[in-house]
Picture 1 (cartoon, rainbow, N blue to C red):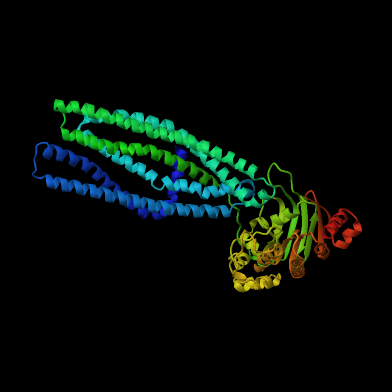
Picture 2: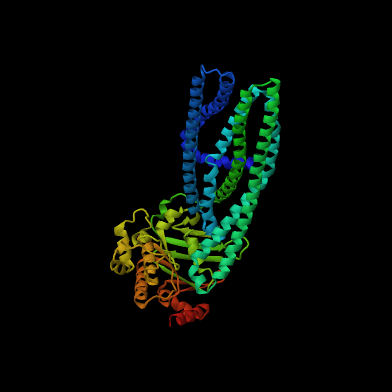
Length: 578
Protein backbone atom coordinates (compact mmCIF):
# COMPACT_ATOMS: atom_id res chain seq x y z
CA UNK A 1 0.00 0.00 0.00
CA UNK A 2 2.92 2.31 0.77
CA UNK A 3 4.32 1.75 -2.73
CA UNK A 4 0.88 2.48 -4.21
CA UNK A 5 0.83 5.90 -2.57
CA UNK A 6 4.30 6.63 -3.97
CA UNK A 7 3.02 5.82 -7.46
CA UNK A 8 -0.10 7.95 -6.96
CA UNK A 9 2.10 10.84 -5.74
CA UNK A 10 4.22 10.43 -8.89
CA UNK A 11 1.13 10.83 -11.07
CA UNK A 12 -0.28 13.75 -9.10
CA UNK A 13 3.07 15.56 -9.33
CA UNK A 14 2.18 15.92 -13.02
CA UNK A 15 -1.34 17.08 -12.09
CA UNK A 16 0.10 19.91 -9.98
CA UNK A 17 0.44 22.47 -12.85
CA UNK A 18 -3.29 22.09 -13.45
CA UNK A 19 -4.34 22.24 -9.80
CA UNK A 20 -6.82 25.07 -10.51
CA UNK A 21 -9.00 22.43 -12.20
CA UNK A 22 -8.55 20.15 -9.20
CA UNK A 23 -9.70 23.07 -7.01
CA UNK A 24 -12.84 23.36 -9.16
CA UNK A 25 -13.47 19.65 -8.63
CA UNK A 26 -12.83 19.86 -4.89
CA UNK A 27 -15.11 22.88 -4.56
CA UNK A 28 -17.94 20.86 -6.13
CA UNK A 29 -17.61 18.03 -3.59
CA UNK A 30 -19.38 19.74 -0.62
CA UNK A 31 -22.24 20.85 -2.87
CA UNK A 32 -22.76 17.46 -4.53
CA UNK A 33 -22.50 15.77 -1.09
CA UNK A 34 -25.07 18.17 0.36
CA UNK A 35 -27.38 17.48 -2.59
CA UNK A 36 -27.00 13.75 -2.01
CA UNK A 37 -28.16 14.23 1.62
CA UNK A 38 -30.94 16.73 0.92
CA UNK A 39 -32.62 14.61 -1.79
CA UNK A 40 -33.51 11.59 0.44
CA UNK A 41 -34.42 13.92 3.32
CA UNK A 42 -36.87 15.79 1.06
CA UNK A 43 -38.31 12.46 -0.13
CA UNK A 44 -38.99 11.45 3.48
CA UNK A 45 -40.67 14.82 4.16
CA UNK A 46 -42.79 14.66 0.98
CA UNK A 47 -44.03 11.13 1.75
CA UNK A 48 -44.66 11.55 5.51
CA UNK A 49 -45.85 15.20 5.60
CA UNK A 50 -47.79 15.37 2.33
CA UNK A 51 -48.55 12.11 0.53
CA UNK A 52 -49.52 9.87 3.48
CA UNK A 53 -51.74 12.50 5.21
CA UNK A 54 -52.94 13.82 1.80
CA UNK A 55 -51.64 17.29 2.68
CA UNK A 56 -51.45 19.25 -0.59
CA UNK A 57 -50.47 22.59 0.94
CA UNK A 58 -46.70 23.11 0.64
CA UNK A 59 -46.25 20.03 -1.59
CA UNK A 60 -45.46 22.12 -4.68
CA UNK A 61 -42.69 23.97 -2.83
CA UNK A 62 -41.18 20.69 -1.57
CA UNK A 63 -41.25 19.25 -5.11
CA UNK A 64 -39.52 22.39 -6.47
CA UNK A 65 -36.88 22.07 -3.75
CA UNK A 66 -36.41 18.42 -4.68
CA UNK A 67 -36.07 19.35 -8.37
CA UNK A 68 -33.57 22.09 -7.49
CA UNK A 69 -31.48 19.71 -5.38
CA UNK A 70 -31.43 17.14 -8.20
CA UNK A 71 -30.40 19.75 -10.83
CA UNK A 72 -27.70 21.28 -8.62
CA UNK A 73 -26.41 17.82 -7.75
CA UNK A 74 -26.10 16.83 -11.41
CA UNK A 75 -24.48 20.15 -12.39
CA UNK A 76 -21.92 19.85 -9.61
CA UNK A 77 -21.24 16.22 -10.59
CA UNK A 78 -20.66 17.37 -14.19
CA UNK A 79 -18.30 20.16 -13.07
CA UNK A 80 -16.42 17.76 -10.82
CA UNK A 81 -16.06 15.09 -13.53
CA UNK A 82 -15.01 17.51 -16.29
CA UNK A 83 -12.49 19.30 -14.07
CA UNK A 84 -10.81 16.06 -13.01
CA UNK A 85 -10.79 14.64 -16.53
CA UNK A 86 -9.28 17.85 -17.90
CA UNK A 87 -6.50 18.00 -15.31
CA UNK A 88 -5.90 14.25 -15.55
CA UNK A 89 -5.60 14.18 -19.34
CA UNK A 90 -3.26 17.20 -19.28
CA UNK A 91 -1.12 15.40 -16.70
CA UNK A 92 -1.02 12.24 -18.84
CA UNK A 93 0.06 14.29 -21.87
CA UNK A 94 2.88 15.84 -19.79
CA UNK A 95 3.86 12.44 -18.38
CA UNK A 96 4.00 10.95 -21.87
CA UNK A 97 6.17 13.87 -23.02
CA UNK A 98 8.47 13.48 -20.00
CA UNK A 99 8.71 9.73 -20.57
CA UNK A 100 9.59 10.21 -24.25
CA UNK A 101 12.23 12.85 -23.48
CA UNK A 102 13.65 10.63 -20.73
CA UNK A 103 13.81 7.69 -23.14
CA UNK A 104 15.78 9.82 -25.60
CA UNK A 105 18.31 10.57 -22.86
CA UNK A 106 18.92 6.93 -21.93
CA UNK A 107 22.31 5.39 -22.74
CA UNK A 108 22.75 3.13 -25.74
CA UNK A 109 23.30 0.11 -23.49
CA UNK A 110 19.69 0.37 -22.23
CA UNK A 111 18.35 -0.05 -25.76
CA UNK A 112 20.77 -2.94 -26.35
CA UNK A 113 19.20 -4.81 -23.43
CA UNK A 114 15.58 -3.63 -23.77
CA UNK A 115 13.50 -4.32 -26.89
CA UNK A 116 12.07 -1.17 -28.50
CA UNK A 117 8.57 -2.64 -28.26
CA UNK A 118 8.76 -2.71 -24.45
CA UNK A 119 9.58 1.00 -24.32
CA UNK A 120 6.85 1.65 -26.89
CA UNK A 121 4.36 -0.23 -24.72
CA UNK A 122 5.18 2.04 -21.77
CA UNK A 123 4.22 5.10 -23.83
CA UNK A 124 1.07 3.63 -25.38
CA UNK A 125 -0.86 0.83 -23.64
CA UNK A 126 0.45 1.68 -20.16
CA UNK A 127 -0.49 5.33 -20.65
CA UNK A 128 -3.96 4.27 -21.79
CA UNK A 129 -4.36 2.19 -18.64
CA UNK A 130 -3.55 5.27 -16.53
CA UNK A 131 -5.89 7.46 -18.56
CA UNK A 132 -8.78 5.07 -17.94
CA UNK A 133 -8.72 5.42 -14.18
CA UNK A 134 -6.11 7.43 -12.32
CA UNK A 135 -7.23 10.72 -13.83
CA UNK A 136 -10.61 10.34 -12.08
CA UNK A 137 -10.41 7.10 -10.12
CA UNK A 138 -8.52 8.06 -6.96
CA UNK A 139 -10.46 11.29 -6.43
CA UNK A 140 -13.64 9.41 -7.34
CA UNK A 141 -12.98 6.98 -4.55
CA UNK A 142 -12.57 9.87 -2.13
CA UNK A 143 -15.86 11.45 -3.25
CA UNK A 144 -17.74 8.16 -3.10
CA UNK A 145 -16.45 7.49 0.40
CA UNK A 146 -17.41 11.04 1.48
CA UNK A 147 -20.92 10.67 0.05
CA UNK A 148 -21.35 7.22 1.55
CA UNK A 149 -20.36 8.42 5.04
CA UNK A 150 -22.66 11.45 4.74
CA UNK A 151 -25.58 9.28 3.63
CA UNK A 152 -24.92 6.79 6.43
CA UNK A 153 -25.03 9.70 8.89
CA UNK A 154 -28.42 10.73 7.47
CA UNK A 155 -29.73 7.18 7.69
CA UNK A 156 -28.46 6.87 11.26
CA UNK A 157 -30.40 10.06 12.04
CA UNK A 158 -33.58 8.68 10.45
CA UNK A 159 -33.34 5.20 12.03
CA UNK A 160 -30.29 3.83 13.78
CA UNK A 161 -31.84 0.33 13.85
CA UNK A 162 -32.16 0.11 10.05
CA UNK A 163 -28.71 1.67 9.68
CA UNK A 164 -27.20 -1.12 11.76
CA UNK A 165 -28.63 -3.64 9.25
CA UNK A 166 -26.57 -1.91 6.54
CA UNK A 167 -23.49 -1.57 8.75
CA UNK A 168 -23.37 -5.35 9.25
CA UNK A 169 -22.36 -5.91 5.62
CA UNK A 170 -19.62 -3.22 5.45
CA UNK A 171 -16.90 -5.38 7.16
CA UNK A 172 -17.81 -8.19 4.74
CA UNK A 173 -17.36 -5.85 1.74
CA UNK A 174 -14.01 -4.64 3.11
CA UNK A 175 -12.83 -8.23 3.62
CA UNK A 176 -13.78 -9.24 0.05
CA UNK A 177 -12.10 -6.21 -1.53
CA UNK A 178 -8.92 -6.73 0.50
CA UNK A 179 -8.82 -10.42 -0.39
CA UNK A 180 -9.19 -9.92 -4.14
CA UNK A 181 -7.14 -6.71 -4.45
CA UNK A 182 -3.73 -8.41 -4.28
CA UNK A 183 -4.79 -11.07 -6.80
CA UNK A 184 -5.99 -8.38 -9.19
CA UNK A 185 -2.76 -6.40 -8.90
CA UNK A 186 -0.64 -9.49 -9.53
CA UNK A 187 -2.51 -10.47 -12.70
CA UNK A 188 -2.64 -6.91 -13.98
CA UNK A 189 1.15 -6.76 -13.60
CA UNK A 190 1.49 -10.03 -15.49
CA UNK A 191 -0.84 -8.86 -18.26
CA UNK A 192 1.01 -5.52 -18.69
CA UNK A 193 4.36 -7.33 -18.90
CA UNK A 194 2.99 -9.93 -21.32
CA UNK A 195 1.50 -7.18 -23.51
CA UNK A 196 4.84 -5.35 -23.56
CA UNK A 197 6.62 -8.54 -24.68
CA UNK A 198 4.01 -9.23 -27.37
CA UNK A 199 4.21 -5.63 -28.62
CA UNK A 200 7.98 -5.83 -28.65
CA UNK A 201 7.98 -8.98 -30.78
CA UNK A 202 5.32 -7.54 -33.07
CA UNK A 203 7.44 -4.41 -33.65
CA UNK A 204 10.55 -6.48 -34.28
CA UNK A 205 8.86 -8.89 -36.72
CA UNK A 206 7.15 -6.11 -38.69
CA UNK A 207 10.45 -4.23 -38.97
CA UNK A 208 11.99 -7.40 -40.36
CA UNK A 209 9.03 -8.40 -42.54
CA UNK A 210 11.14 -8.46 -45.72
CA UNK A 211 13.56 -10.96 -44.20
CA UNK A 212 10.70 -13.03 -42.78
CA UNK A 213 9.02 -13.29 -46.19
CA UNK A 214 12.30 -13.84 -48.03
CA UNK A 215 13.03 -16.98 -45.98
CA UNK A 216 9.37 -18.13 -45.73
CA UNK A 217 9.44 -17.86 -41.93
CA UNK A 218 5.88 -16.48 -41.61
CA UNK A 219 4.49 -19.53 -39.78
CA UNK A 220 7.31 -19.63 -37.23
CA UNK A 221 7.04 -15.90 -36.55
CA UNK A 222 3.25 -16.19 -36.23
CA UNK A 223 3.65 -19.09 -33.75
CA UNK A 224 6.01 -17.10 -31.54
CA UNK A 225 3.65 -14.12 -31.55
CA UNK A 226 0.70 -16.43 -30.86
CA UNK A 227 2.43 -17.89 -27.78
CA UNK A 228 3.24 -14.42 -26.43
CA UNK A 229 -0.26 -13.22 -27.19
CA UNK A 230 -1.69 -16.26 -25.39
CA UNK A 231 0.39 -15.43 -22.32
CA UNK A 232 -1.19 -11.97 -22.29
CA UNK A 233 -4.65 -13.45 -22.87
CA UNK A 234 -4.22 -15.92 -20.00
CA UNK A 235 -3.15 -13.18 -17.55
CA UNK A 236 -5.97 -10.92 -18.77
CA UNK A 237 -8.54 -13.70 -18.36
CA UNK A 238 -7.34 -14.41 -14.83
CA UNK A 239 -7.67 -10.73 -13.92
CA UNK A 240 -11.14 -10.69 -15.51
CA UNK A 241 -12.18 -13.64 -13.32
CA UNK A 242 -11.25 -11.79 -10.13
CA UNK A 243 -12.73 -8.55 -11.49
CA UNK A 244 -16.04 -10.29 -12.27
CA UNK A 245 -16.02 -12.10 -8.91
CA UNK A 246 -15.49 -8.81 -7.10
CA UNK A 247 -18.35 -7.11 -8.96
CA UNK A 248 -20.75 -10.08 -8.62
CA UNK A 249 -20.16 -10.51 -4.90
CA UNK A 250 -20.79 -6.83 -4.22
CA UNK A 251 -23.93 -6.97 -6.40
CA UNK A 252 -25.21 -10.00 -4.47
CA UNK A 253 -24.48 -8.38 -1.09
CA UNK A 254 -26.36 -5.25 -2.22
CA UNK A 255 -29.48 -7.24 -3.17
CA UNK A 256 -29.45 -9.26 0.07
CA UNK A 257 -29.00 -6.07 2.15
CA UNK A 258 -31.92 -4.39 0.34
CA UNK A 259 -34.14 -7.40 1.10
CA UNK A 260 -33.07 -7.31 4.77
CA UNK A 261 -33.88 -3.58 5.03
CA UNK A 262 -37.35 -4.07 3.50
CA UNK A 263 -38.07 -7.07 5.75
CA UNK A 264 -36.89 -5.39 8.92
CA UNK A 265 -38.36 -2.00 7.96
CA UNK A 266 -41.80 -3.46 7.26
CA UNK A 267 -41.84 -4.89 10.77
CA UNK A 268 -40.81 -1.51 12.24
CA UNK A 269 -43.63 0.23 10.34
CA UNK A 270 -46.18 -2.24 11.68
CA UNK A 271 -44.88 -1.58 15.20
CA UNK A 272 -45.01 2.18 14.54
CA UNK A 273 -41.27 2.60 15.17
CA UNK A 274 -40.68 4.24 11.78
CA UNK A 275 -42.81 5.84 9.08
CA UNK A 276 -43.39 4.76 5.47
CA UNK A 277 -41.44 7.83 4.33
CA UNK A 278 -38.40 6.72 6.33
CA UNK A 279 -38.50 3.24 4.75
CA UNK A 280 -38.86 4.70 1.22
CA UNK A 281 -36.05 7.15 2.03
CA UNK A 282 -33.92 4.22 3.22
CA UNK A 283 -34.59 2.18 0.08
CA UNK A 284 -33.82 5.18 -2.15
CA UNK A 285 -30.67 6.02 -0.19
CA UNK A 286 -29.58 2.41 0.03
CA UNK A 287 -29.20 2.33 -3.75
CA UNK A 288 -27.16 5.53 -3.58
CA UNK A 289 -24.91 3.91 -0.99
CA UNK A 290 -24.46 0.60 -2.78
CA UNK A 291 -24.02 2.07 -6.26
CA UNK A 292 -20.71 3.65 -5.10
CA UNK A 293 -19.86 0.38 -3.33
CA UNK A 294 -20.47 -1.56 -6.57
CA UNK A 295 -18.48 1.06 -8.48
CA UNK A 296 -15.86 0.89 -5.74
CA UNK A 297 -15.19 -2.71 -6.74
CA UNK A 298 -14.75 -1.63 -10.38
CA UNK A 299 -12.70 1.41 -9.40
CA UNK A 300 -10.37 -0.75 -7.32
CA UNK A 301 -9.88 -3.05 -10.33
CA UNK A 302 -9.23 -0.10 -12.66
CA UNK A 303 -6.89 1.59 -10.18
CA UNK A 304 -4.97 -1.66 -9.74
CA UNK A 305 -4.62 -1.87 -13.53
CA UNK A 306 -3.45 1.73 -13.65
CA UNK A 307 -1.01 1.29 -10.75
CA UNK A 308 0.48 -1.76 -12.46
CA UNK A 309 1.01 0.37 -15.59
CA UNK A 310 2.34 3.29 -13.56
CA UNK A 311 4.79 0.96 -11.82
CA UNK A 312 6.27 0.03 -15.21
CA UNK A 313 6.46 3.69 -16.19
CA UNK A 314 8.15 4.51 -12.89
CA UNK A 315 10.75 1.80 -13.56
CA UNK A 316 11.52 3.41 -16.92
CA UNK A 317 11.75 6.88 -15.37
CA UNK A 318 14.21 5.51 -12.80
CA UNK A 319 16.60 4.36 -15.54
CA UNK A 320 19.72 6.49 -15.28
CA UNK A 321 20.02 8.96 -18.19
CA UNK A 322 23.26 9.83 -19.91
CA UNK A 323 25.54 11.77 -17.59
CA UNK A 324 26.19 15.22 -18.94
CA UNK A 325 29.17 17.39 -18.19
CA UNK A 326 29.56 21.15 -18.34
CA UNK A 327 30.35 22.94 -21.60
CA UNK A 328 34.06 23.60 -21.94
CA UNK A 329 35.74 26.44 -23.82
CA UNK A 330 38.59 24.19 -24.95
CA UNK A 331 36.21 22.30 -27.25
CA UNK A 332 35.47 25.12 -29.70
CA UNK A 333 37.23 23.23 -32.52
CA UNK A 334 39.33 20.08 -32.79
CA UNK A 335 43.05 19.92 -32.05
CA UNK A 336 43.86 16.51 -30.60
CA UNK A 337 42.27 13.19 -29.61
CA UNK A 338 44.01 10.76 -27.28
CA UNK A 339 43.21 7.22 -26.10
CA UNK A 340 45.35 6.17 -23.13
CA UNK A 341 45.22 2.53 -22.02
CA UNK A 342 41.48 2.22 -22.66
CA UNK A 343 39.66 -0.95 -21.61
CA UNK A 344 35.97 -1.55 -22.33
CA UNK A 345 33.32 -4.28 -22.27
CA UNK A 346 29.61 -4.09 -23.14
CA UNK A 347 28.58 -5.58 -19.80
CA UNK A 348 30.00 -6.73 -16.48
CA UNK A 349 29.74 -10.39 -17.49
CA UNK A 350 31.00 -10.03 -21.06
CA UNK A 351 34.54 -10.24 -22.38
CA UNK A 352 36.53 -7.06 -22.92
CA UNK A 353 36.13 -5.60 -26.39
CA UNK A 354 39.05 -3.18 -25.95
CA UNK A 355 42.24 -4.12 -24.08
CA UNK A 356 44.65 -1.29 -23.35
CA UNK A 357 44.03 0.70 -26.55
CA UNK A 358 46.24 3.81 -26.89
CA UNK A 359 46.71 6.19 -29.82
CA UNK A 360 46.81 9.89 -30.70
CA UNK A 361 45.19 11.81 -33.56
CA UNK A 362 46.12 15.43 -34.25
CA UNK A 363 44.22 18.01 -36.27
CA UNK A 364 44.29 17.42 -40.03
CA UNK A 365 45.59 13.87 -39.71
CA UNK A 366 43.97 10.67 -41.01
CA UNK A 367 43.78 7.50 -38.93
CA UNK A 368 42.61 4.16 -40.36
CA UNK A 369 41.60 1.21 -38.19
CA UNK A 370 41.65 -2.26 -39.74
CA UNK A 371 41.02 -5.71 -38.36
CA UNK A 372 38.76 -8.74 -38.56
CA UNK A 373 35.11 -8.60 -37.53
CA UNK A 374 34.82 -8.27 -33.74
CA UNK A 375 38.30 -6.88 -33.26
CA UNK A 376 36.96 -3.68 -31.63
CA UNK A 377 37.21 -1.23 -34.55
CA UNK A 378 33.65 0.16 -34.40
CA UNK A 379 33.76 0.18 -30.59
CA UNK A 380 36.48 2.85 -30.75
CA UNK A 381 34.09 5.07 -32.75
CA UNK A 382 31.23 4.36 -30.34
CA UNK A 383 33.31 5.49 -27.37
CA UNK A 384 34.32 8.71 -29.15
CA UNK A 385 30.65 9.57 -29.82
CA UNK A 386 29.71 8.61 -26.22
CA UNK A 387 27.31 5.94 -27.46
CA UNK A 388 28.86 3.84 -24.69
CA UNK A 389 30.67 4.84 -21.51
CA UNK A 390 32.05 3.12 -18.43
CA UNK A 391 35.45 2.57 -20.01
CA UNK A 392 38.62 2.59 -17.97
CA UNK A 393 41.65 4.61 -18.97
CA UNK A 394 41.50 8.05 -20.56
CA UNK A 395 39.86 9.41 -23.69
CA UNK A 396 40.50 13.12 -24.17
CA UNK A 397 39.68 15.70 -26.83
CA UNK A 398 41.76 18.88 -26.70
CA UNK A 399 43.00 17.67 -23.32
CA UNK A 400 39.44 17.44 -21.91
CA UNK A 401 38.28 14.06 -20.56
CA UNK A 402 35.49 12.81 -22.83
CA UNK A 403 33.20 11.85 -19.96
CA UNK A 404 33.07 15.47 -18.75
CA UNK A 405 32.03 16.92 -22.12
CA UNK A 406 28.27 17.30 -22.76
CA UNK A 407 27.23 15.07 -25.64
CA UNK A 408 25.54 17.93 -27.50
CA UNK A 409 28.76 19.96 -27.43
CA UNK A 410 30.88 16.95 -28.37
CA UNK A 411 28.77 16.20 -31.43
CA UNK A 412 29.28 19.75 -32.71
CA UNK A 413 32.97 18.80 -32.91
CA UNK A 414 32.61 15.16 -34.01
CA UNK A 415 30.39 13.61 -36.70
CA UNK A 416 29.91 9.94 -37.45
CA UNK A 417 29.30 8.63 -40.97
CA UNK A 418 27.61 5.33 -40.28
CA UNK A 419 27.77 2.10 -42.21
CA UNK A 420 24.08 1.45 -41.45
CA UNK A 421 22.06 4.34 -42.87
CA UNK A 422 18.77 5.30 -41.22
CA UNK A 423 16.51 7.81 -42.95
CA UNK A 424 13.29 9.20 -41.47
CA UNK A 425 10.02 9.26 -43.39
CA UNK A 426 10.46 13.00 -43.82
CA UNK A 427 11.74 15.36 -46.50
CA UNK A 428 15.37 15.08 -47.62
CA UNK A 429 16.20 18.48 -46.12
CA UNK A 430 14.98 17.24 -42.72
CA UNK A 431 17.05 14.05 -43.05
CA UNK A 432 20.15 16.15 -43.63
CA UNK A 433 19.55 18.90 -41.06
CA UNK A 434 17.58 16.91 -38.43
CA UNK A 435 16.43 20.43 -37.45
CA UNK A 436 19.67 21.00 -35.57
CA UNK A 437 20.42 24.58 -34.45
CA UNK A 438 22.21 26.78 -37.00
CA UNK A 439 21.58 24.35 -39.88
CA UNK A 440 19.27 26.05 -42.37
CA UNK A 441 18.56 25.40 -46.03
CA UNK A 442 21.80 27.05 -47.09
CA UNK A 443 23.85 24.71 -44.88
CA UNK A 444 21.84 21.71 -46.11
CA UNK A 445 22.54 22.49 -49.77
CA UNK A 446 26.18 23.27 -49.05
CA UNK A 447 26.63 19.89 -47.29
CA UNK A 448 24.87 18.06 -50.15
CA UNK A 449 27.16 19.73 -52.69
CA UNK A 450 30.21 18.89 -50.56
CA UNK A 451 29.47 15.15 -50.74
CA UNK A 452 28.17 15.21 -54.35
CA UNK A 453 24.55 14.52 -53.35
CA UNK A 454 23.15 17.83 -54.66
CA UNK A 455 23.01 16.72 -58.31
CA UNK A 456 20.68 13.74 -57.82
CA UNK A 457 18.56 15.67 -55.28
CA UNK A 458 18.19 18.59 -57.69
CA UNK A 459 16.92 16.22 -60.37
CA UNK A 460 14.06 14.98 -58.16
CA UNK A 461 10.61 16.51 -58.78
CA UNK A 462 10.38 18.05 -55.30
CA UNK A 463 14.15 18.41 -54.84
CA UNK A 464 14.98 18.82 -51.13
CA UNK A 465 11.30 18.57 -50.21
CA UNK A 466 11.15 15.00 -51.59
CA UNK A 467 9.80 12.76 -48.84
CA UNK A 468 11.82 9.66 -48.01
CA UNK A 469 9.73 6.48 -47.97
CA UNK A 470 10.36 3.49 -45.70
CA UNK A 471 13.96 4.29 -44.72
CA UNK A 472 14.99 5.24 -48.26
CA UNK A 473 12.95 2.80 -50.34
CA UNK A 474 12.57 5.48 -53.03
CA UNK A 475 16.35 6.06 -53.11
CA UNK A 476 19.20 3.83 -54.20
CA UNK A 477 21.56 2.46 -51.54
CA UNK A 478 24.28 4.82 -52.74
CA UNK A 479 21.99 7.87 -52.72
CA UNK A 480 20.93 7.06 -49.15
CA UNK A 481 24.62 6.79 -48.22
CA UNK A 482 25.33 10.23 -49.73
CA UNK A 483 22.41 11.73 -47.78
CA UNK A 484 23.89 10.32 -44.58
CA UNK A 485 27.28 11.82 -45.56
CA UNK A 486 25.60 15.21 -46.05
CA UNK A 487 23.97 14.84 -42.61
CA UNK A 488 27.41 14.42 -41.00
CA UNK A 489 28.99 17.28 -42.94
CA UNK A 490 26.10 19.74 -42.32
CA UNK A 491 27.15 20.11 -38.69
CA UNK A 492 30.53 21.47 -39.84
CA UNK A 493 32.34 19.11 -37.49
CA UNK A 494 36.12 19.11 -37.77
CA UNK A 495 36.60 15.46 -36.76
CA UNK A 496 34.86 12.92 -39.00
CA UNK A 497 34.43 9.31 -37.91
CA UNK A 498 33.96 7.17 -40.98
CA UNK A 499 32.54 3.67 -40.66
CA UNK A 500 32.99 2.80 -44.31
CA UNK A 501 30.07 1.19 -46.07
CA UNK A 502 30.61 -2.23 -47.60
CA UNK A 503 27.25 -2.53 -49.39
CA UNK A 504 27.40 -2.80 -53.17
CA UNK A 505 25.99 0.18 -55.09
CA UNK A 506 25.82 1.15 -58.74
CA UNK A 507 29.10 2.22 -60.32
CA UNK A 508 28.10 5.87 -60.81
CA UNK A 509 27.09 6.34 -57.16
CA UNK A 510 30.11 4.31 -56.05
CA UNK A 511 32.33 6.85 -57.79
CA UNK A 512 30.49 9.73 -56.08
CA UNK A 513 30.84 8.05 -52.67
CA UNK A 514 34.56 7.53 -53.26
CA UNK A 515 34.96 11.17 -54.38
CA UNK A 516 33.13 12.30 -51.23
CA UNK A 517 35.37 10.15 -49.03
CA UNK A 518 38.49 11.41 -50.81
CA UNK A 519 37.38 15.00 -50.27
CA UNK A 520 36.71 14.38 -46.58
CA UNK A 521 40.09 12.68 -46.20
CA UNK A 522 41.79 15.65 -47.87
CA UNK A 523 40.11 18.39 -45.85
CA UNK A 524 39.10 16.94 -42.46
CA UNK A 525 40.57 15.15 -39.47
CA UNK A 526 39.39 11.58 -39.96
CA UNK A 527 39.24 8.28 -38.11
CA UNK A 528 38.10 5.59 -40.54
CA UNK A 529 37.12 2.01 -39.91
CA UNK A 530 38.45 1.16 -43.35
CA UNK A 531 37.18 -1.38 -45.83
CA UNK A 532 38.72 0.17 -48.94
CA UNK A 533 42.38 -0.07 -49.90
CA UNK A 534 42.34 3.53 -51.13
CA UNK A 535 41.32 4.80 -47.67
CA UNK A 536 43.94 2.67 -45.92
CA UNK A 537 46.73 3.87 -48.18
CA UNK A 538 45.85 7.55 -47.65
CA UNK A 539 45.95 7.28 -43.85
CA UNK A 540 48.80 8.97 -41.96
CA UNK A 541 48.57 6.20 -39.36
CA UNK A 542 47.03 2.74 -39.47
CA UNK A 543 46.01 0.79 -36.37
CA UNK A 544 45.80 -2.97 -36.83
CA UNK A 545 43.45 -4.51 -34.26
CA UNK A 546 42.95 -8.07 -33.13
CA UNK A 547 40.77 -9.19 -30.20
CA UNK A 548 40.54 -5.68 -28.81
CA UNK A 549 44.25 -4.90 -28.94
CA UNK A 550 46.39 -2.84 -31.28
CA UNK A 551 48.94 -5.36 -32.49
CA UNK A 552 50.53 -3.26 -35.23
CA UNK A 553 50.68 0.43 -36.11
CA UNK A 554 52.33 2.63 -38.72
CA UNK A 555 51.68 3.94 -42.23
CA UNK A 556 50.84 1.70 -45.17
CA UNK A 557 54.40 1.35 -46.45
CA UNK A 558 55.98 0.56 -43.09
CA UNK A 559 53.32 -2.05 -42.24
CA UNK A 560 53.73 -3.74 -45.62
CA UNK A 561 57.46 -3.93 -45.05
CA UNK A 562 56.87 -5.57 -41.63
CA UNK A 563 54.97 -8.34 -43.41
CA UNK A 564 52.80 -9.12 -40.37
CA UNK A 565 49.06 -9.45 -39.74
CA UNK A 566 48.39 -6.24 -41.70
CA UNK A 567 49.63 -7.88 -44.89
CA UNK A 568 47.10 -10.71 -44.42
CA UNK A 569 44.28 -8.19 -43.97
CA UNK A 570 45.47 -6.30 -47.01
CA UNK A 571 45.14 -9.44 -49.13
CA UNK A 572 41.57 -9.89 -47.89
CA UNK A 573 40.71 -6.28 -48.75
CA UNK A 574 42.25 -6.75 -52.17
CA UNK A 575 40.12 -9.87 -52.79
CA UNK A 576 36.91 -8.05 -51.77
CA UNK A 577 37.58 -5.17 -54.14
CA UNK A 578 38.67 -7.32 -57.07
